[in-house]
Image (cartoon, rainbow, N blue to C red; front, side, top):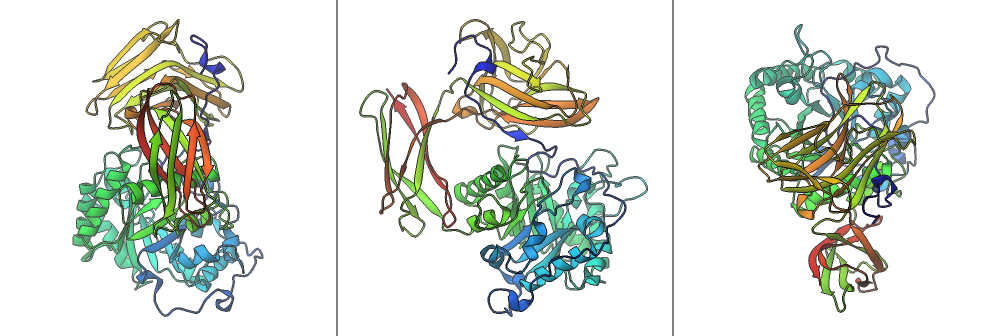
Length: 602
Protein backbone atom coordinates (compact mmCIF):
# COMPACT_ATOMS: atom_id res chain seq x y z
CA UNK A 1 0.00 0.00 0.00
CA UNK A 2 3.02 2.29 0.21
CA UNK A 3 4.32 4.56 2.93
CA UNK A 4 2.65 7.89 3.75
CA UNK A 5 4.34 10.76 1.98
CA UNK A 6 6.24 8.63 -0.56
CA UNK A 7 6.07 9.68 -4.24
CA UNK A 8 3.49 7.66 -6.11
CA UNK A 9 6.10 6.40 -8.58
CA UNK A 10 7.48 4.08 -5.92
CA UNK A 11 4.14 2.50 -5.14
CA UNK A 12 3.50 -1.01 -6.33
CA UNK A 13 -0.24 -1.09 -7.01
CA UNK A 14 -0.70 -0.28 -10.68
CA UNK A 15 -3.15 -0.74 -13.48
CA UNK A 16 -1.49 -0.53 -16.87
CA UNK A 17 -3.22 0.02 -20.19
CA UNK A 18 -0.89 0.48 -23.17
CA UNK A 19 -2.55 2.90 -25.57
CA UNK A 20 -1.27 3.43 -29.09
CA UNK A 21 -4.39 4.65 -30.90
CA UNK A 22 -5.68 8.14 -31.51
CA UNK A 23 -9.28 7.03 -32.07
CA UNK A 24 -11.60 7.59 -29.09
CA UNK A 25 -13.20 4.54 -27.46
CA UNK A 26 -16.53 3.54 -28.88
CA UNK A 27 -16.73 6.11 -31.70
CA UNK A 28 -15.16 6.63 -35.09
CA UNK A 29 -13.11 9.62 -34.00
CA UNK A 30 -13.31 13.04 -35.59
CA UNK A 31 -15.74 13.06 -38.52
CA UNK A 32 -13.22 15.06 -40.50
CA UNK A 33 -11.21 12.29 -42.12
CA UNK A 34 -7.90 12.14 -43.89
CA UNK A 35 -8.38 11.30 -47.54
CA UNK A 36 -7.22 7.80 -48.54
CA UNK A 37 -4.31 7.17 -50.86
CA UNK A 38 -5.29 8.57 -54.27
CA UNK A 39 -3.91 5.71 -56.35
CA UNK A 40 -6.04 2.55 -56.27
CA UNK A 41 -4.20 -0.78 -56.12
CA UNK A 42 -5.13 -3.18 -58.90
CA UNK A 43 -2.26 -5.69 -58.93
CA UNK A 44 -3.32 -9.27 -59.70
CA UNK A 45 -1.00 -10.91 -57.19
CA UNK A 46 -1.63 -14.64 -56.85
CA UNK A 47 -3.82 -15.60 -53.90
CA UNK A 48 -5.14 -18.84 -52.52
CA UNK A 49 -8.44 -19.55 -54.28
CA UNK A 50 -11.64 -19.26 -52.29
CA UNK A 51 -13.53 -22.45 -51.53
CA UNK A 52 -16.17 -23.53 -53.98
CA UNK A 53 -19.71 -24.15 -52.81
CA UNK A 54 -18.91 -27.87 -52.64
CA UNK A 55 -16.09 -27.19 -50.18
CA UNK A 56 -18.27 -25.38 -47.65
CA UNK A 57 -19.96 -27.18 -44.80
CA UNK A 58 -23.63 -28.19 -44.94
CA UNK A 59 -26.31 -28.24 -47.63
CA UNK A 60 -27.27 -25.16 -49.62
CA UNK A 61 -30.14 -23.20 -48.12
CA UNK A 62 -33.09 -21.90 -50.08
CA UNK A 63 -33.79 -19.28 -47.40
CA UNK A 64 -32.16 -15.86 -47.70
CA UNK A 65 -29.68 -15.15 -44.89
CA UNK A 66 -31.35 -11.74 -44.59
CA UNK A 67 -34.43 -13.43 -43.12
CA UNK A 68 -32.46 -14.59 -40.06
CA UNK A 69 -33.45 -13.22 -36.65
CA UNK A 70 -31.32 -11.99 -35.14
CA UNK A 71 -29.35 -11.05 -38.25
CA UNK A 72 -25.60 -11.39 -37.60
CA UNK A 73 -23.03 -9.10 -39.21
CA UNK A 74 -19.25 -9.54 -39.32
CA UNK A 75 -17.04 -6.66 -40.46
CA UNK A 76 -13.33 -6.96 -39.62
CA UNK A 77 -10.89 -4.33 -40.85
CA UNK A 78 -8.60 -5.43 -43.67
CA UNK A 79 -4.81 -5.38 -43.32
CA UNK A 80 -4.47 -2.00 -45.05
CA UNK A 81 -6.08 1.18 -43.77
CA UNK A 82 -3.35 3.69 -44.54
CA UNK A 83 -5.65 6.69 -44.18
CA UNK A 84 -6.24 5.71 -40.54
CA UNK A 85 -2.57 5.37 -39.66
CA UNK A 86 -2.71 1.64 -38.84
CA UNK A 87 -3.64 -1.68 -40.35
CA UNK A 88 -6.37 -4.11 -39.42
CA UNK A 89 -6.29 -7.89 -39.19
CA UNK A 90 -3.14 -9.35 -40.73
CA UNK A 91 -4.82 -12.69 -41.52
CA UNK A 92 -7.95 -11.10 -43.04
CA UNK A 93 -7.66 -12.95 -46.36
CA UNK A 94 -7.21 -16.29 -44.60
CA UNK A 95 -10.92 -16.10 -43.78
CA UNK A 96 -11.63 -17.06 -47.39
CA UNK A 97 -9.20 -19.94 -47.83
CA UNK A 98 -10.53 -23.51 -48.13
CA UNK A 99 -10.87 -25.04 -44.65
CA UNK A 100 -10.43 -21.68 -42.89
CA UNK A 101 -10.58 -22.14 -39.12
CA UNK A 102 -13.95 -20.52 -38.45
CA UNK A 103 -16.60 -23.08 -39.51
CA UNK A 104 -18.79 -22.59 -36.42
CA UNK A 105 -18.60 -18.79 -36.41
CA UNK A 106 -19.13 -18.65 -40.18
CA UNK A 107 -22.27 -20.76 -39.82
CA UNK A 108 -23.69 -18.08 -37.50
CA UNK A 109 -22.87 -15.07 -39.71
CA UNK A 110 -25.41 -13.78 -42.24
CA UNK A 111 -23.75 -10.61 -43.59
CA UNK A 112 -20.03 -10.07 -44.24
CA UNK A 113 -19.41 -6.34 -44.64
CA UNK A 114 -16.52 -4.56 -46.36
CA UNK A 115 -15.62 -0.87 -46.46
CA UNK A 116 -15.90 1.25 -49.61
CA UNK A 117 -12.41 2.65 -48.94
CA UNK A 118 -10.96 -0.88 -49.01
CA UNK A 119 -12.78 -1.66 -52.26
CA UNK A 120 -11.71 1.57 -53.96
CA UNK A 121 -8.14 2.01 -52.73
CA UNK A 122 -6.61 -0.98 -51.01
CA UNK A 123 -7.85 -4.23 -52.57
CA UNK A 124 -6.19 -5.70 -55.63
CA UNK A 125 -8.39 -7.34 -58.25
CA UNK A 126 -7.33 -10.76 -56.99
CA UNK A 127 -7.99 -9.86 -53.34
CA UNK A 128 -11.42 -8.50 -54.16
CA UNK A 129 -12.32 -11.63 -56.12
CA UNK A 130 -11.13 -13.80 -53.24
CA UNK A 131 -13.41 -11.99 -50.78
CA UNK A 132 -16.39 -11.89 -53.15
CA UNK A 133 -16.10 -15.59 -54.00
CA UNK A 134 -15.39 -16.59 -50.40
CA UNK A 135 -18.46 -14.74 -49.13
CA UNK A 136 -20.68 -16.33 -51.79
CA UNK A 137 -19.25 -19.82 -51.19
CA UNK A 138 -20.24 -19.59 -47.53
CA UNK A 139 -23.78 -18.52 -48.38
CA UNK A 140 -23.31 -15.07 -46.87
CA UNK A 141 -24.66 -11.74 -48.08
CA UNK A 142 -22.03 -9.16 -48.99
CA UNK A 143 -22.53 -5.83 -47.26
CA UNK A 144 -20.88 -2.50 -48.04
CA UNK A 145 -20.37 0.48 -45.74
CA UNK A 146 -20.31 3.74 -47.68
CA UNK A 147 -21.23 7.39 -47.38
CA UNK A 148 -24.64 8.52 -48.58
CA UNK A 149 -24.03 12.23 -49.17
CA UNK A 150 -22.17 14.22 -51.82
CA UNK A 151 -20.00 17.21 -50.79
CA UNK A 152 -20.99 20.64 -52.02
CA UNK A 153 -18.59 23.37 -53.07
CA UNK A 154 -18.98 24.89 -49.62
CA UNK A 155 -18.77 21.88 -47.30
CA UNK A 156 -18.55 18.13 -46.82
CA UNK A 157 -15.07 17.55 -48.20
CA UNK A 158 -13.24 14.90 -46.12
CA UNK A 159 -16.17 14.63 -43.71
CA UNK A 160 -17.47 11.20 -42.76
CA UNK A 161 -20.66 10.25 -44.59
CA UNK A 162 -19.78 12.36 -47.65
CA UNK A 163 -18.42 9.78 -50.08
CA UNK A 164 -21.52 8.62 -51.94
CA UNK A 165 -20.39 6.80 -55.08
CA UNK A 166 -21.38 3.85 -57.24
CA UNK A 167 -17.72 3.03 -57.95
CA UNK A 168 -17.23 0.40 -55.21
CA UNK A 169 -20.46 -1.38 -56.18
CA UNK A 170 -19.49 -1.46 -59.84
CA UNK A 171 -16.05 -2.79 -58.94
CA UNK A 172 -17.57 -5.55 -56.80
CA UNK A 173 -19.89 -6.43 -59.67
CA UNK A 174 -16.93 -6.53 -62.06
CA UNK A 175 -15.30 -9.03 -59.69
CA UNK A 176 -18.33 -11.29 -60.01
CA UNK A 177 -20.09 -10.25 -56.82
CA UNK A 178 -23.21 -8.40 -55.77
CA UNK A 179 -23.94 -6.12 -52.85
CA UNK A 180 -27.02 -7.21 -50.92
CA UNK A 181 -26.86 -4.67 -48.10
CA UNK A 182 -25.57 -1.08 -47.91
CA UNK A 183 -24.89 0.58 -44.56
CA UNK A 184 -24.54 4.35 -44.68
CA UNK A 185 -21.71 5.70 -42.59
CA UNK A 186 -23.03 8.25 -40.08
CA UNK A 187 -24.73 10.50 -42.64
CA UNK A 188 -26.95 12.17 -40.02
CA UNK A 189 -24.00 12.92 -37.73
CA UNK A 190 -21.76 14.03 -40.61
CA UNK A 191 -24.36 16.12 -42.38
CA UNK A 192 -26.28 17.63 -39.47
CA UNK A 193 -24.45 17.33 -36.12
CA UNK A 194 -20.73 17.58 -36.90
CA UNK A 195 -19.40 21.14 -36.50
CA UNK A 196 -15.67 20.80 -37.28
CA UNK A 197 -13.71 21.70 -40.43
CA UNK A 198 -15.79 21.60 -43.63
CA UNK A 199 -18.98 21.03 -41.61
CA UNK A 200 -22.26 21.46 -43.47
CA UNK A 201 -24.69 21.57 -40.51
CA UNK A 202 -27.55 21.06 -42.94
CA UNK A 203 -31.13 20.81 -41.69
CA UNK A 204 -32.06 17.20 -41.07
CA UNK A 205 -34.56 17.36 -43.95
CA UNK A 206 -31.80 18.26 -46.42
CA UNK A 207 -29.63 15.42 -45.17
CA UNK A 208 -32.52 13.00 -45.55
CA UNK A 209 -33.26 14.27 -49.06
CA UNK A 210 -29.63 13.84 -50.10
CA UNK A 211 -29.47 10.27 -48.79
CA UNK A 212 -32.81 9.37 -50.38
CA UNK A 213 -31.59 10.71 -53.73
CA UNK A 214 -28.51 8.51 -53.53
CA UNK A 215 -30.62 5.46 -52.64
CA UNK A 216 -32.65 5.99 -55.81
CA UNK A 217 -29.40 6.21 -57.80
CA UNK A 218 -28.06 3.15 -55.99
CA UNK A 219 -31.04 1.06 -57.03
CA UNK A 220 -30.39 1.75 -60.70
CA UNK A 221 -27.40 -0.59 -60.46
CA UNK A 222 -28.51 -2.93 -57.63
CA UNK A 223 -32.32 -2.80 -57.49
CA UNK A 224 -32.93 -5.19 -54.58
CA UNK A 225 -30.33 -3.81 -52.17
CA UNK A 226 -31.33 -3.29 -48.54
CA UNK A 227 -30.24 0.06 -47.12
CA UNK A 228 -29.72 1.14 -43.53
CA UNK A 229 -27.71 3.54 -41.45
CA UNK A 230 -25.24 3.55 -38.56
CA UNK A 231 -25.11 6.58 -36.28
CA UNK A 232 -22.97 7.50 -33.27
CA UNK A 233 -24.52 7.99 -29.84
CA UNK A 234 -22.51 11.04 -28.87
CA UNK A 235 -23.39 13.01 -25.76
CA UNK A 236 -25.14 15.59 -27.99
CA UNK A 237 -27.11 12.97 -29.97
CA UNK A 238 -30.18 11.73 -28.08
CA UNK A 239 -32.44 8.78 -28.78
CA UNK A 240 -35.23 11.18 -29.77
CA UNK A 241 -32.83 12.91 -32.20
CA UNK A 242 -32.23 9.55 -33.91
CA UNK A 243 -35.96 8.87 -33.97
CA UNK A 244 -36.55 12.20 -35.69
CA UNK A 245 -33.81 11.32 -38.20
CA UNK A 246 -35.50 7.99 -38.99
CA UNK A 247 -38.77 9.86 -39.57
CA UNK A 248 -37.10 12.43 -41.83
CA UNK A 249 -35.57 9.69 -43.98
CA UNK A 250 -38.92 7.87 -44.28
CA UNK A 251 -40.55 11.11 -45.40
CA UNK A 252 -37.83 11.82 -48.00
CA UNK A 253 -37.48 8.26 -49.33
CA UNK A 254 -41.08 7.10 -49.08
CA UNK A 255 -39.94 4.07 -47.08
CA UNK A 256 -38.12 3.46 -43.78
CA UNK A 257 -34.55 2.29 -43.36
CA UNK A 258 -34.31 -1.50 -43.65
CA UNK A 259 -32.17 -1.52 -40.49
CA UNK A 260 -30.45 0.86 -38.09
CA UNK A 261 -27.16 0.33 -36.24
CA UNK A 262 -25.89 2.17 -33.16
CA UNK A 263 -22.26 3.16 -32.53
CA UNK A 264 -21.93 3.68 -28.78
CA UNK A 265 -19.59 6.17 -27.18
CA UNK A 266 -18.08 3.79 -24.61
CA UNK A 267 -16.69 6.79 -22.71
CA UNK A 268 -20.19 7.81 -21.59
CA UNK A 269 -21.19 6.19 -18.31
CA UNK A 270 -24.82 5.92 -19.46
CA UNK A 271 -24.10 4.39 -22.88
CA UNK A 272 -26.17 1.25 -22.08
CA UNK A 273 -29.27 3.26 -21.22
CA UNK A 274 -28.75 5.49 -24.27
CA UNK A 275 -28.46 2.42 -26.52
CA UNK A 276 -31.60 0.90 -25.04
CA UNK A 277 -33.55 4.13 -25.57
CA UNK A 278 -32.38 4.41 -29.20
CA UNK A 279 -33.27 0.75 -29.76
CA UNK A 280 -36.82 1.46 -28.60
CA UNK A 281 -37.04 4.42 -31.01
CA UNK A 282 -36.17 2.17 -33.97
CA UNK A 283 -38.32 -0.76 -32.90
CA UNK A 284 -41.31 1.54 -32.35
CA UNK A 285 -41.02 2.41 -36.06
CA UNK A 286 -40.69 -1.23 -37.13
CA UNK A 287 -36.99 -0.84 -38.01
CA UNK A 288 -34.68 -3.75 -37.03
CA UNK A 289 -31.89 -2.37 -34.86
CA UNK A 290 -28.51 -3.48 -33.58
CA UNK A 291 -25.73 -2.18 -31.34
CA UNK A 292 -22.19 -2.51 -32.74
CA UNK A 293 -20.08 -4.72 -30.48
CA UNK A 294 -16.37 -3.89 -30.36
CA UNK A 295 -13.48 -3.29 -27.98
CA UNK A 296 -12.94 0.38 -28.79
CA UNK A 297 -9.36 1.63 -28.40
CA UNK A 298 -8.08 -1.30 -26.32
CA UNK A 299 -4.36 -1.86 -26.81
CA UNK A 300 -4.24 -5.62 -27.50
CA UNK A 301 -6.41 -8.30 -29.09
CA UNK A 302 -7.18 -9.85 -25.71
CA UNK A 303 -8.06 -6.51 -24.14
CA UNK A 304 -10.20 -5.65 -27.18
CA UNK A 305 -12.19 -8.88 -26.95
CA UNK A 306 -12.50 -8.61 -23.17
CA UNK A 307 -13.86 -5.07 -23.46
CA UNK A 308 -16.28 -6.08 -26.22
CA UNK A 309 -17.62 -9.00 -24.23
CA UNK A 310 -17.98 -6.92 -21.10
CA UNK A 311 -20.13 -4.48 -23.10
CA UNK A 312 -22.20 -7.33 -24.50
CA UNK A 313 -22.77 -8.65 -20.99
CA UNK A 314 -23.71 -5.18 -19.75
CA UNK A 315 -26.18 -4.49 -22.54
CA UNK A 316 -27.80 -7.89 -22.98
CA UNK A 317 -27.23 -9.29 -19.48
CA UNK A 318 -27.69 -6.43 -17.04
CA UNK A 319 -30.09 -4.25 -19.07
CA UNK A 320 -31.85 -7.03 -20.95
CA UNK A 321 -31.15 -5.50 -24.36
CA UNK A 322 -32.56 -7.61 -27.19
CA UNK A 323 -31.10 -6.37 -30.49
CA UNK A 324 -32.70 -7.49 -33.75
CA UNK A 325 -29.26 -7.51 -35.38
CA UNK A 326 -25.94 -8.54 -33.88
CA UNK A 327 -23.07 -6.48 -35.30
CA UNK A 328 -19.40 -7.39 -34.80
CA UNK A 329 -17.44 -4.59 -36.46
CA UNK A 330 -13.97 -3.10 -36.17
CA UNK A 331 -12.48 0.02 -37.73
CA UNK A 332 -9.77 0.04 -35.05
CA UNK A 333 -6.18 -1.15 -34.74
CA UNK A 334 -7.41 -4.39 -33.15
CA UNK A 335 -7.98 -7.23 -33.35
CA UNK A 336 -4.82 -8.02 -35.30
CA UNK A 337 -5.96 -11.59 -35.93
CA UNK A 338 -9.33 -12.94 -36.98
CA UNK A 339 -8.41 -16.65 -36.82
CA UNK A 340 -8.74 -19.29 -35.47
CA UNK A 341 -12.15 -19.28 -33.83
CA UNK A 342 -10.83 -21.60 -31.11
CA UNK A 343 -8.59 -18.78 -29.81
CA UNK A 344 -10.57 -16.48 -27.49
CA UNK A 345 -8.36 -13.51 -28.40
CA UNK A 346 -9.24 -13.49 -32.13
CA UNK A 347 -12.20 -11.78 -33.77
CA UNK A 348 -13.86 -15.07 -34.77
CA UNK A 349 -13.08 -16.26 -31.23
CA UNK A 350 -15.28 -13.40 -29.99
CA UNK A 351 -18.08 -14.51 -32.31
CA UNK A 352 -17.78 -18.10 -31.12
CA UNK A 353 -17.87 -16.98 -27.49
CA UNK A 354 -20.98 -14.88 -28.12
CA UNK A 355 -22.87 -17.92 -29.40
CA UNK A 356 -21.73 -20.13 -26.53
CA UNK A 357 -23.96 -21.34 -23.72
CA UNK A 358 -24.88 -18.54 -21.33
CA UNK A 359 -24.07 -19.14 -17.69
CA UNK A 360 -24.86 -17.56 -14.34
CA UNK A 361 -23.32 -17.48 -10.85
CA UNK A 362 -25.62 -17.81 -7.87
CA UNK A 363 -24.30 -16.64 -4.51
CA UNK A 364 -25.20 -19.04 -1.72
CA UNK A 365 -23.95 -17.86 1.65
CA UNK A 366 -21.43 -15.20 2.66
CA UNK A 367 -19.95 -15.61 6.13
CA UNK A 368 -17.46 -13.69 8.24
CA UNK A 369 -16.89 -16.20 11.07
CA UNK A 370 -13.81 -14.43 12.42
CA UNK A 371 -12.42 -10.90 12.26
CA UNK A 372 -11.01 -10.33 8.80
CA UNK A 373 -12.01 -13.79 7.55
CA UNK A 374 -14.48 -14.35 4.71
CA UNK A 375 -16.14 -17.48 3.30
CA UNK A 376 -18.29 -17.44 0.16
CA UNK A 377 -20.05 -20.35 -1.53
CA UNK A 378 -22.29 -20.56 -4.55
CA UNK A 379 -22.91 -22.35 -7.82
CA UNK A 380 -22.20 -21.93 -11.52
CA UNK A 381 -24.96 -23.16 -13.84
CA UNK A 382 -25.93 -22.56 -17.44
CA UNK A 383 -29.27 -20.96 -18.29
CA UNK A 384 -30.88 -24.40 -18.62
CA UNK A 385 -29.85 -25.24 -15.06
CA UNK A 386 -27.05 -27.64 -16.02
CA UNK A 387 -23.88 -27.42 -13.87
CA UNK A 388 -20.63 -26.08 -15.27
CA UNK A 389 -18.00 -28.32 -13.60
CA UNK A 390 -14.22 -27.86 -13.38
CA UNK A 391 -14.52 -24.12 -13.96
CA UNK A 392 -12.51 -21.47 -12.11
CA UNK A 393 -14.43 -18.87 -10.12
CA UNK A 394 -12.47 -15.89 -8.76
CA UNK A 395 -13.37 -13.58 -5.89
CA UNK A 396 -12.41 -9.91 -5.52
CA UNK A 397 -13.40 -7.21 -3.03
CA UNK A 398 -13.57 -3.48 -3.71
CA UNK A 399 -13.64 -1.14 -0.68
CA UNK A 400 -16.82 0.89 -0.84
CA UNK A 401 -15.15 4.03 0.49
CA UNK A 402 -12.17 3.64 -1.83
CA UNK A 403 -8.64 2.59 -1.00
CA UNK A 404 -5.44 4.45 -1.83
CA UNK A 405 -4.12 3.18 -5.14
CA UNK A 406 -2.25 4.19 -8.25
CA UNK A 407 -3.80 4.10 -11.70
CA UNK A 408 -1.42 4.20 -14.65
CA UNK A 409 -1.53 4.58 -18.40
CA UNK A 410 1.41 3.93 -20.73
CA UNK A 411 1.48 5.03 -24.35
CA UNK A 412 3.28 6.89 -27.13
CA UNK A 413 3.15 10.64 -27.75
CA UNK A 414 1.34 11.43 -31.05
CA UNK A 415 3.68 12.45 -33.85
CA UNK A 416 2.18 15.95 -34.20
CA UNK A 417 2.05 16.80 -30.48
CA UNK A 418 4.30 19.52 -29.02
CA UNK A 419 2.80 20.00 -25.54
CA UNK A 420 0.19 18.57 -23.18
CA UNK A 421 -2.01 19.30 -20.19
CA UNK A 422 -3.49 17.01 -17.57
CA UNK A 423 -7.28 17.31 -17.34
CA UNK A 424 -9.77 16.15 -14.73
CA UNK A 425 -13.36 15.95 -15.98
CA UNK A 426 -16.37 15.28 -13.77
CA UNK A 427 -19.83 14.97 -15.36
CA UNK A 428 -18.74 16.66 -18.58
CA UNK A 429 -16.93 15.89 -21.84
CA UNK A 430 -17.83 12.21 -21.74
CA UNK A 431 -17.73 11.70 -17.97
CA UNK A 432 -20.80 10.87 -15.90
CA UNK A 433 -23.38 11.82 -14.92
CA UNK A 434 -23.00 10.56 -11.38
CA UNK A 435 -21.92 11.54 -7.89
CA UNK A 436 -18.22 12.23 -7.38
CA UNK A 437 -16.19 12.22 -4.17
CA UNK A 438 -12.56 12.15 -5.28
CA UNK A 439 -9.22 12.56 -3.56
CA UNK A 440 -6.09 13.06 -5.69
CA UNK A 441 -2.65 12.94 -4.06
CA UNK A 442 -0.30 13.24 -7.01
CA UNK A 443 -0.39 13.34 -10.81
CA UNK A 444 2.64 12.30 -12.81
CA UNK A 445 3.76 12.39 -16.46
CA UNK A 446 7.23 11.28 -17.59
CA UNK A 447 8.84 10.10 -20.82
CA UNK A 448 11.37 7.52 -21.93
CA UNK A 449 12.03 5.95 -18.56
CA UNK A 450 13.07 9.26 -16.97
CA UNK A 451 11.92 9.99 -13.42
CA UNK A 452 11.35 13.70 -14.04
CA UNK A 453 7.70 14.61 -13.54
CA UNK A 454 6.65 17.19 -16.13
CA UNK A 455 3.31 18.08 -14.52
CA UNK A 456 3.47 21.52 -12.82
CA UNK A 457 2.60 21.50 -9.11
CA UNK A 458 1.84 17.76 -9.28
CA UNK A 459 1.25 17.20 -5.54
CA UNK A 460 -0.79 20.38 -4.96
CA UNK A 461 1.81 21.72 -2.53
CA UNK A 462 1.06 25.22 -3.82
CA UNK A 463 -2.69 24.81 -3.72
CA UNK A 464 -4.24 25.24 -7.17
CA UNK A 465 -1.36 27.35 -8.52
CA UNK A 466 -0.76 26.36 -12.17
CA UNK A 467 -4.10 24.51 -12.21
CA UNK A 468 -7.22 26.08 -13.68
CA UNK A 469 -10.53 24.91 -12.19
CA UNK A 470 -14.10 25.59 -13.22
CA UNK A 471 -17.61 24.20 -12.90
CA UNK A 472 -20.31 24.00 -10.27
CA UNK A 473 -18.81 21.30 -8.07
CA UNK A 474 -16.55 21.79 -5.03
CA UNK A 475 -12.77 21.88 -5.63
CA UNK A 476 -10.30 22.51 -2.79
CA UNK A 477 -6.88 21.49 -1.51
CA UNK A 478 -6.36 20.12 2.00
CA UNK A 479 -3.48 18.70 4.05
CA UNK A 480 -2.99 15.09 3.01
CA UNK A 481 -4.61 12.36 5.06
CA UNK A 482 -1.58 10.20 4.23
CA UNK A 483 1.05 12.06 6.16
CA UNK A 484 2.93 15.13 4.98
CA UNK A 485 1.93 16.97 1.85
CA UNK A 486 -1.36 18.05 0.34
CA UNK A 487 -4.26 16.51 -1.55
CA UNK A 488 -6.94 17.71 -3.97
CA UNK A 489 -10.57 17.10 -2.97
CA UNK A 490 -13.34 17.19 -5.61
CA UNK A 491 -17.02 16.75 -4.84
CA UNK A 492 -20.00 16.96 -7.19
CA UNK A 493 -23.60 15.82 -7.42
CA UNK A 494 -24.82 14.22 -10.68
CA UNK A 495 -26.14 17.62 -11.78
CA UNK A 496 -22.85 19.41 -11.08
CA UNK A 497 -19.71 19.37 -13.22
CA UNK A 498 -16.02 20.07 -12.71
CA UNK A 499 -13.27 20.78 -15.21
CA UNK A 500 -9.63 21.17 -14.09
CA UNK A 501 -6.57 21.61 -16.31
CA UNK A 502 -2.93 21.62 -15.30
CA UNK A 503 -0.46 24.08 -16.67
CA UNK A 504 0.89 23.22 -20.12
CA UNK A 505 4.16 21.25 -20.37
CA UNK A 506 6.38 20.16 -23.22
CA UNK A 507 6.30 16.65 -24.73
CA UNK A 508 8.47 14.77 -27.21
CA UNK A 509 6.69 13.55 -30.33
CA UNK A 510 6.93 9.78 -30.69
CA UNK A 511 8.32 9.21 -27.18
CA UNK A 512 6.95 6.55 -24.86
CA UNK A 513 5.21 8.10 -21.90
CA UNK A 514 3.92 7.07 -18.49
CA UNK A 515 0.92 8.86 -17.01
CA UNK A 516 -0.29 8.09 -13.48
CA UNK A 517 -2.38 9.30 -10.61
CA UNK A 518 -2.42 8.39 -6.92
CA UNK A 519 -6.00 8.67 -5.72
CA UNK A 520 -8.78 7.43 -3.50
CA UNK A 521 -12.06 6.79 -5.34
CA UNK A 522 -15.14 5.32 -3.61
CA UNK A 523 -17.38 2.85 -5.42
CA UNK A 524 -20.24 5.34 -5.74
CA UNK A 525 -18.02 7.60 -7.86
CA UNK A 526 -17.42 5.01 -10.59
CA UNK A 527 -18.28 6.42 -14.02
CA UNK A 528 -18.47 10.06 -12.99
CA UNK A 529 -14.90 11.17 -13.71
CA UNK A 530 -11.74 10.60 -15.67
CA UNK A 531 -8.22 12.01 -15.67
CA UNK A 532 -6.71 12.57 -19.10
CA UNK A 533 -3.50 13.62 -20.72
CA UNK A 534 -4.47 15.92 -23.59
CA UNK A 535 -1.80 16.29 -26.26
CA UNK A 536 -1.69 19.61 -28.09
CA UNK A 537 -0.30 21.26 -31.17
CA UNK A 538 -1.92 24.62 -30.61
CA UNK A 539 -5.26 22.80 -30.28
CA UNK A 540 -6.11 19.31 -29.06
CA UNK A 541 -4.46 16.46 -30.98
CA UNK A 542 -5.45 13.48 -28.84
CA UNK A 543 -6.89 12.69 -25.42
CA UNK A 544 -6.06 9.52 -23.47
CA UNK A 545 -8.06 8.78 -20.34
CA UNK A 546 -7.73 7.02 -17.02
CA UNK A 547 -11.26 6.31 -15.85
CA UNK A 548 -11.28 6.89 -12.11
CA UNK A 549 -12.44 3.79 -10.25
CA UNK A 550 -11.25 1.95 -7.13
CA UNK A 551 -9.00 -1.07 -7.49
CA UNK A 552 -10.37 -4.46 -6.51
CA UNK A 553 -8.40 -6.71 -4.14
CA UNK A 554 -7.99 -10.35 -5.23
CA UNK A 555 -9.20 -12.77 -2.54
CA UNK A 556 -8.65 -16.10 -4.24
CA UNK A 557 -10.32 -18.63 -6.52
CA UNK A 558 -11.84 -22.11 -6.54
CA UNK A 559 -12.80 -24.78 -9.05
CA UNK A 560 -16.42 -25.85 -9.35
CA UNK A 561 -17.32 -29.41 -8.38
CA UNK A 562 -19.42 -31.81 -10.55
CA UNK A 563 -22.61 -30.10 -9.37
CA UNK A 564 -21.26 -26.62 -10.24
CA UNK A 565 -20.75 -25.69 -6.60
CA UNK A 566 -17.76 -23.83 -5.17
CA UNK A 567 -16.46 -22.38 -1.90
CA UNK A 568 -13.80 -19.67 -1.51
CA UNK A 569 -12.19 -18.72 1.79
CA UNK A 570 -10.17 -15.54 2.27
CA UNK A 571 -8.42 -13.85 5.17
CA UNK A 572 -6.94 -10.49 6.16
CA UNK A 573 -9.81 -8.22 5.14
CA UNK A 574 -9.67 -5.01 7.12
CA UNK A 575 -12.88 -3.80 8.76
CA UNK A 576 -15.14 -1.85 6.43
CA UNK A 577 -17.66 -2.13 3.63
CA UNK A 578 -16.84 -4.07 0.45
CA UNK A 579 -18.39 -4.94 -2.88
CA UNK A 580 -17.67 -8.60 -3.53
CA UNK A 581 -17.45 -9.80 -7.13
CA UNK A 582 -17.49 -13.46 -8.14
CA UNK A 583 -16.39 -13.98 -11.72
CA UNK A 584 -16.17 -16.83 -14.23
CA UNK A 585 -14.12 -15.98 -17.32
CA UNK A 586 -15.99 -18.36 -19.63
CA UNK A 587 -14.54 -20.85 -22.10
CA UNK A 588 -15.02 -21.89 -25.70
CA UNK A 589 -18.50 -23.22 -24.88
CA UNK A 590 -19.79 -20.94 -22.11
CA UNK A 591 -20.37 -17.24 -21.60
CA UNK A 592 -18.55 -15.43 -18.81
CA UNK A 593 -20.62 -14.79 -15.70
CA UNK A 594 -20.39 -12.69 -12.57
CA UNK A 595 -22.32 -11.82 -9.44
CA UNK A 596 -21.88 -8.99 -6.92
CA UNK A 597 -22.86 -8.48 -3.30
CA UNK A 598 -22.03 -5.83 -0.72
CA UNK A 599 -20.88 -6.84 2.77
CA UNK A 600 -19.56 -5.28 5.96
CA UNK A 601 -16.53 -6.73 7.76
CA UNK A 602 -16.37 -5.81 11.45
